[in-house]
Image (cartoon, one colour):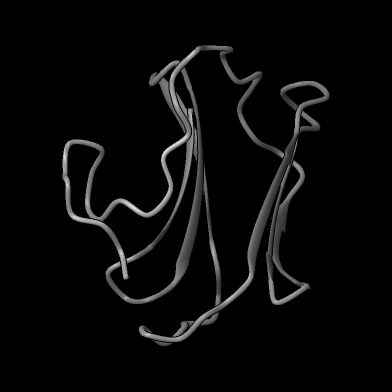
Amino acid sequence: MYWVRFSTVNKIEFVVSQSGTSATTLVSDSTYQQDQWYHITVTYTYVTPSSSEMRVYVDGQLVKSTDYAVGPLEINNKPLIVGIKNNLESTSVMS
């Protein structure tokens, strides 16, 4: 399981969770303005538990990375949801 969101202090959080038991969270050092468009890209590459990689890019620039992340991700048939505020149960969409 994984998600990308803005934190309560307007930083980008990229979280990778292994079956909900352990997680790696990557948080940007910079803050970002609300109501402004950004091109945010995240990547996750599982090699082994000691060399898995997570990367966060904003507008094409690498802003945060780690070479140690949990893994591997579990494979499931859950839908990819984009633009939901707060939690997956919410019907409020981001604008």
